[in-house]
Length: 92
Image (cartoon, rainbow, N blue to C red; front, side, top):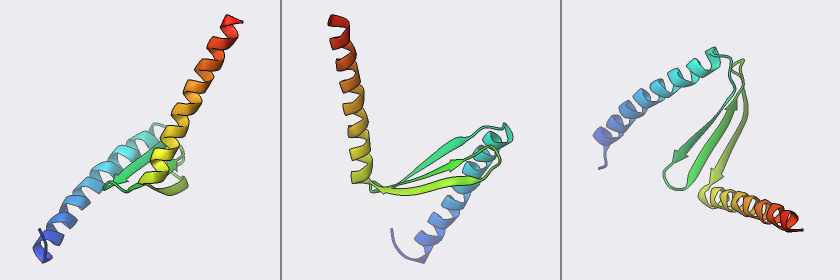
């Protein structure tokens, strides 16, 4: 799909999606909660934002897929390492 019609169709669809997304975030903020929003864009980027209970966006990051995979891998290694240490401590 390419051309002006395709772009207009995508634009209209994204506008509806963004409106729905905004409504959901507003409900969370109205409840007085802080939330983290993560948006995956294609297979190569993740956009993250932290929104506090006052509605202020406090942190925004854009990560590439390789950074995300690295962070997940690092988290798994930390979790496995801490379990291994706990098991070793129990044995001693």
